[in-house]
Length: 150
Image 1 (cartoon, rainbow, N blue to C red):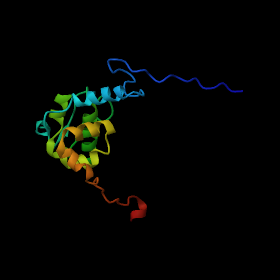
Image 2 (tube, rainbow, N blue to C red):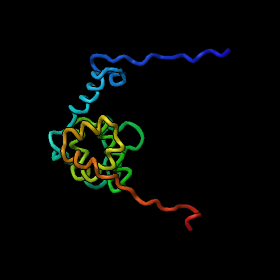
Image 3 (cartoon, one colour):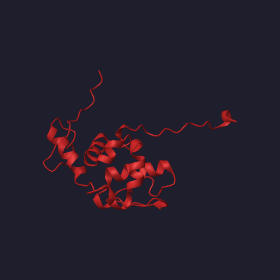
Image 4 (tube, rainbow, N blue to C red):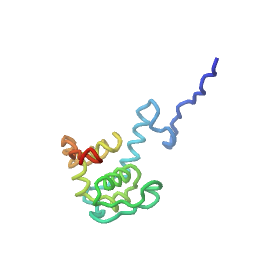
């Protein structure tokens, strides 16, 4: 008879909100996780004065692996940058790397790419984003590629 795989307990949350702080069963753990993102929010979307064109290389504290330079002219790279900065950036990073106009334009799609916690924290704070919650994400028509398309 084969041995049962070893099971590991779910991490217990710590008062500092360390490992497992949002995986516990209590509402307090989720609230600590949400507070982590609330503290990073800018006072206003007008504080988001990041670039609108060109290539952006965020600091290693925000993007530490994978693609390190993002071309804002390329939609996928722009969305990747915004998704990463929303998840990993501190308040100063948000203001320096994100742009209000791009965020508002991209929000209907971007909100589907970030975690539920990030989405709800931003939409609770900024009515402009909340108003865009009902706008369907942009859908690009698929183009056929390869030999079959010829």
